[in-house]
Length: 127
Image (cartoon, rainbow, N blue to C red; front, side, top):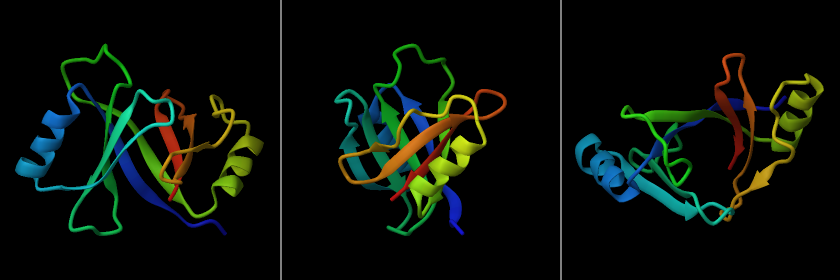
């Protein structure tokens, strides 16, 4: 059976550097990693506490230029140890708005998205 847990929450930001400074200096999170998405536009930063294997905060810059005044949670991610099995399981359930394929990031992490019943983004993610 595939193991699942909450992996991270993605927040869309306008200014990655300013937001990183806030989350590290004020909130006390540590920068665990940064990368440019394979699309070459979106910048990602992952934060957590004390290098632990934990639920993370993912900051996303470049996703959209039209953000509301309030912070925007873009998605939450469920960690899985077998992304192909999860993709096949969800596809068999005929869930609407399933990504056409599993995406592999430059760091080797893999993911796909679905929409929940209220249109919320849910990501399945394998490290």
